[in-house]
Length: 129
Image 1 (spheres, rainbow, N blue to C red):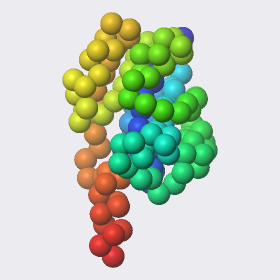
Image 2 (cartoon, rainbow, N blue to C red):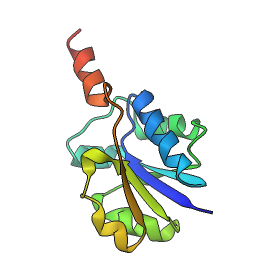
Image 3 (tube, rainbow, N blue to C red):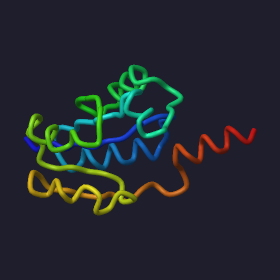
Image 4 (tube, rainbow, N blue to C red):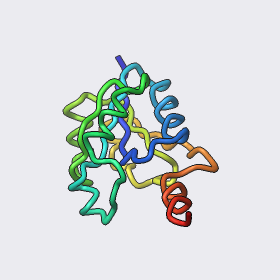
């Protein structure tokens, strides 16, 4: 079985999120999604509209997602890959090169983002109304 992992906040879920989850799942048999905890978001100076538990519940309901785990720090990725016996690490290509250090533990693929949508865009548009 080929295991795939991806990371993100996954707040204000939109078709770009579904797109990346679908594409990641198509690359393997089992998709693990690590989502930023509320505490980790605060360390990154980010704030989610939905709290961790609600984001986790939403992701668990998506048919492409097999497992959701918490992301507590930037440094846990190697440990997650080893602990969950991950074969493939997938991220959006705006992170290209940032996670190449994982190549000694698994394959690393950067997927192109869905054009025309982002959580930042949604938040900006909502704030202007």
